[in-house]
Amino acid sequence: MLIGELANEAGTTIRALRYYEQQGLLHPRRAPNGYREYDETAVGQVGNIKLLLSIGLTAHDVRALLPCLDQDITDGPICPASAQVIARRLTDVEEKIAALDVFRTRLIEVLVQAQ
Image 1 (tube, rainbow, N blue to C red):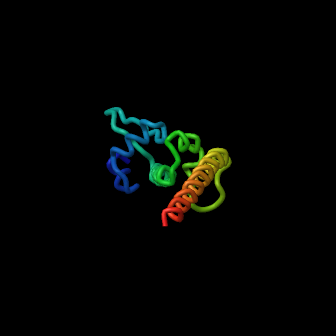
Image 2 (spheres, rainbow, N blue to C red; image 1 turned 30 degrees about the vertical axis):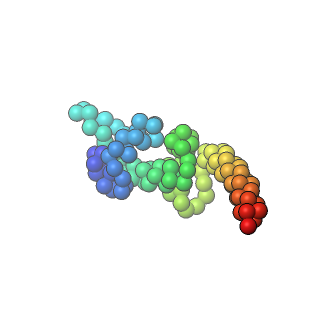
Image 3 (spheres, one colour; image 1 turned 90 degrees about the vertical axis):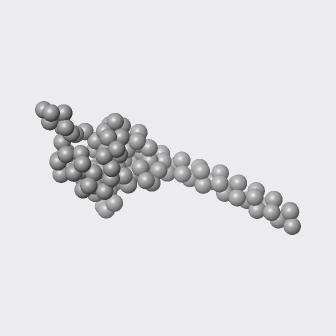
């Protein structure tokens, strides 16, 4: 399928698909005329890429998960290649939550003192 067809099937834009390719997340074949050609598995891959980026992973993180993108990542066990990336991102999120909790506590203290 061509890039426009993939964009329609995957519910995204041609621009996003070009970005994914630029970031090394998608690897289309090139026809003799230079057009990008994708197989049917690209629809699922793009869905997985969109999901992973939407939950805060970076393109670099997603690139590390390329071996996992052919399977449905929303259902079933995660592929082993993703465990290290997910663990690192989880640590980052927990650190941000802890910092925000400290900030929240300080804001509450300031409000209580102001009353």
